[in-house]
Amino acid sequence: MSIDVDIPEPHVVLITINRPEKRNALDAEHMAALGDAWRRVRDDADVWCAVITGAGDRAFCAGGDLATHIPTFTDKRPPARSSSVELAHMLRAFPLYKPVVAAVNGVCVGGGMEMMLGTDLRVAADGAEFGLAEVRWSLFPGGGSTVRLPRQIAFCHAMEILLLGERVDANDALRLGLVNKVVPRAELMDAAMGYARMLVRNGPVATQAIKESVLRTQGIPTEQAYYIERHLSRYVFDSEDAREGPRAFAEKREPRYQGR
Image (cartoon, rainbow, N blue to C red; front, side, top):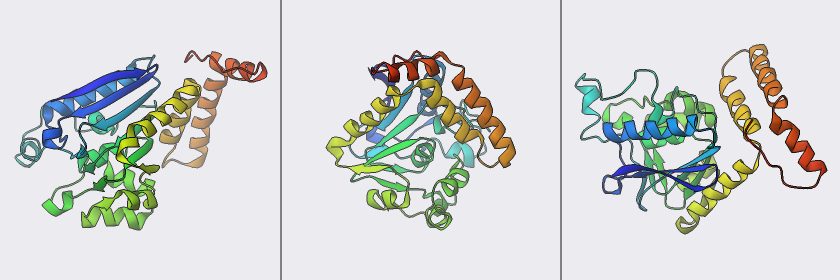
């Protein structure tokens, strides 16, 4: 039982929630370990992309462990190593501008889906299911879902997921725009790693600045958003990688990016 962190290919970190006997549900210990994994991705300059998945073939992540974690909230006792603002394990209020690919191998509900909403590209196995059932148990999906979900899919579909608490299968998730593609279970990791390879092929300075611009300009006035975009654009154009890219194009070769 652990949060496994591996480097399967250069510049790519693979995070696996390895608690299959609990459907990869997270107790306080595993939340802290997952938060540490995301911090490693953020802080390691040699990491340009992350892929997250769950162990086994039943669940991506079933969210918080109802038996051990949720009572720490309902009994008004603060959970171990938590923050009232930053929830790093959920990618909520946690600035991570490196791209993240979710490989959803099974059930993705509760906090598992809340974390998935903080990822950038999402591949689902054909048997995956998605849902936020908190409302059925008189709980609140406080990992960012009431903010992120209506910004990512149509309002009425977001409200259906949030207020009814019913699950959505993989094909409906694709139709709603929750995921980028659905593949057979056996092809899931190949598809996710395919995205990762494309991401690290691109210039990391530009990739991270583009994601930062998208995230930081949501919900703010247009002129303020354009100011942030201009600032990040200038940062990219001043980088060594911005000189290497056009040079490689002119020389008809693959660029050799350094991330600076």
